[in-house]
Each structure stands twice: as structure tokens, then as C-alpha cells.
Image 1 (cartoon, rainbow over the protein chains, first blue to last red):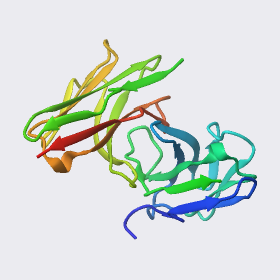
Image 2 (image 1 turned 60 degrees about the vertical axis):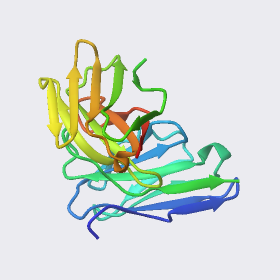
Image 3 (image 1 turned 180 degrees about the vertical axis):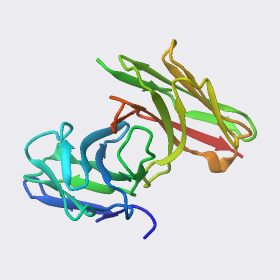
Length: 115
Length: 112
């Protein structure tokens, strides 16, 4: 496809369960970012990938959160033992090089609800 | 601590008027600032980038200013249309590399 895609679009889970969120970036984009957006809040940076490496994981809120990227393409964000405070929209973005003036192209997000 | 503040109130304006949004920041020294548009249920879409040495940037009916002394950017939508109704986010580079820090956004509603 031409843009960034994410799946699922919505995910409802029970507290304590694990969830996996997927991101398909734009083909050829080496940089990939995960953000979290809570109601009325700005986008909160979670993690940055350059190729398959994650040089910046500084935004991951706890060790329950992890992410990987394979083949320099698809990325998966995993949240283990979900808590209600994890409920938010999780956005993925990709950019061509990962330099400061890159435009970031966002996917539509995955809305996660933890009951 | 570092902070980015956008208009705290939603903006409601009449079609044809100019909407002016503010983005103020503290404890950052960004080399550039970006503005994004976000529609409900969608991811943000890039609109404009302005560098620290540029005072003003225009794109169609959009105009952005960047005052590094005041630590402020203004975003103007001229001749506004109902289709301009959305949330507008400012973002600035946090460390002059890949990382962007986003404001919470200002929601604009343009009445026909």
C-alpha cells in the first residue's frame, strides 16, 4: 500500500492479558516510530527504529512494553500483562531516513481498551 | 522541565475568517518546528516545517511564523472552510536528530 498501515484498528482486552500491535511502514522507509496518544494528551514517544535496530527505547513506560522490527519493515509492539492505564491510541509512523527534517508519515492507529 | 503548550481552548470560528493557533515552548532549542493536522480516528498528517532561521512559511491558505526569541510559533488558517475543522498539532525537534516532541493540539471547528 501507499501509506502506513496498522492492525488491528481496535483491540479490547482484559487486564493482565498480553497484546500485540502491528505496523507496516511505507516501503523503503528506514525509520519507524511508535507513539502513544491518550485522550486530550499530546503524542508520547515510545520507541524509534533505524532499520531493525532500536537505538532509542527511552519512551517505553515499563518493562511490560517491548517492540521489534524485522526485515527493516514490519514492527510489532507488545504489551504484556496489560493494565487499564495502557488504554490509549497507539500510533506508528515511518520516515525515509530518520533525520531531523524528515516528514513522519503516520498510520491510523490502534485503539487499545483494557477492561 | 521541557514543555510545549498549545491553545488550551478549542477554537470555533466562522467560515471565511482567519484562525490563529499558538504553540509555546520552554526549555527547548529547536532547529525547526512542524505542524500536523489530525482528523478524528486518523493519524496526524504533516502540513508544514519551518526552520529556526525562517521567520515565516506559507502553503496555500496556511501561514506559520517562528519566533525563537519568544519561543513561539503561530499557525494561521486564512479564509477558513468547514473542511479545515480538525485538531492541529505542533511538534519540535527535541534533540536535533530524529525525535519530535508534540503538543496536545488545538481543535478547530469552522462553522458554515
